Length: 221
Image (cartoon, rainbow, N blue to C red; front, side):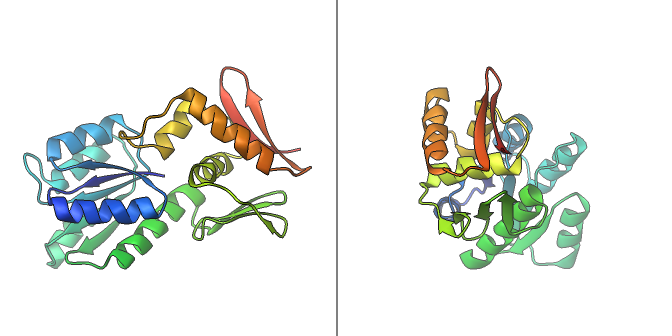
């Protein structure tokens, strides 16, 4: 999934980014409130990790404007403000969770998993279609009782297709969910990942169908 980290402390931002990438997420970073506001309005993120004390525009203002614009991206607030009024204000403005600095990366990772599971998977920890099962926490995919040997990118594509099972997903949507600005990606690359995934999903009841000019749909046969 694609996550925006909004944090002006470079050391904290780097630690969070490294942790999220190890969880197989694509990560963009903004250290400025105005830049973060623009990214959240124009890009399709699955989650925002938002600091409150930012240059030019603080996190609460960003959050307020984000919700006023009708954007429902989950927001995890990070802040050194431990007082209850600040927490209540953030939650009332539409934050989905709140984590006070300093924090352990393990707790951050757990909260990220919970928010993404709620957002992408309706709170369930596994996705099922026919004989195919994908565990959203362990990132393991199985066909029946056999594990699938998938790369990080193949797992990402499979998760996106499973979340939309029965519906067409465009190449652009796959790119938006799986790749950050620093990734060099194009439509041909997505075709390669889908081709490899098709070969590994060798099951009589599952197929990835190409809808010409629109994208791909994962469905039962």
